[in-house]
Each structure stands twice: as structure tokens, then as C-alpha cells.
Image (tube, rainbow, N blue to C red; front, side):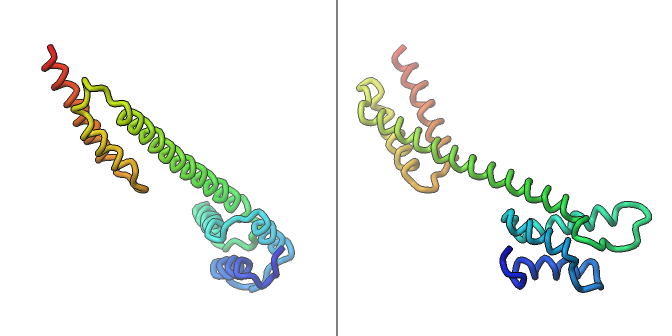
Length: 164
């Protein structure tokens, strides 16, 4: 465990005391809970969220007038909040990676097409060059790419009808 005076430890204790009131000390069991959360690297905001959830659940039960007396009651909600936080992060990372990979694949295909553009479809060069420019930006505009794709489809239809 990091030193007992850490900001993490103090923030959790103060937050809990604010809801529980006196006594303003933690039992050794409660200190162990905080130490375990810290060792598990549960972010402070997640621990506080779990404590808030526990208090809300406790208050909603009929006939409950007293306050939560121990952090032991909060442990399950802290762990649930941590699991949800991890799931949110995994989803975000995956989405970012997929978007990045999607852009790289599209950019590679556009460059390949522009490098060997057949004479019969040279009318697409301007639209594909614009797509290449958009895909080269670090934060590309997907809506702009969709408009370019629509223009390419329009050009293909127009030119296929002209050939008939």
C-alpha cells in the first residue's frame, strides 16, 4: 500500500465521512478495502462513484433511516463501477483502433487506385485525389468522405449510361 497519507486514501476517507458523519476514523478492515482498491489501481473517481451508488441503493430501501456505517457495504459497488469503467475503456480503444485501421486501409486502396488508374475511368481521378487528401489528415471527416463516395457513384452511373 502507498503511504496512508496519500491523496487517494484521504479523498476516499473524506468522501465517506461526509456521508457517514461521526466517527471520523476508519477501522482496520476499511483501511484494507482502500488499500486493496489502490493496489487494484481503481481510479479515485471510480471508487467515489461506487460509494455514491452504495449510498443511493441503501437510501432507496424502505425503512432505512441510518447511514452506511462501513466501507464494506460499498465494496461490491466499487468493484462493479471499476468493471464498467474497464469495459468503457476497452470499447473506446477498440473503436479508435478500428477507425484508424479503416482509414489506413482506405488510404492504401485509394493510393493503389490512383497509381494504376485505368484510362477508361480517368474521370474519377479528381474525386479519388480529394479522398486521398481527406484520408491523409490526422482527424479525417467521415461525412466528407461519404460525400466524395456519393460523387464517385454518381460519376460511375453517369459514365456507364453514356457508354450505353
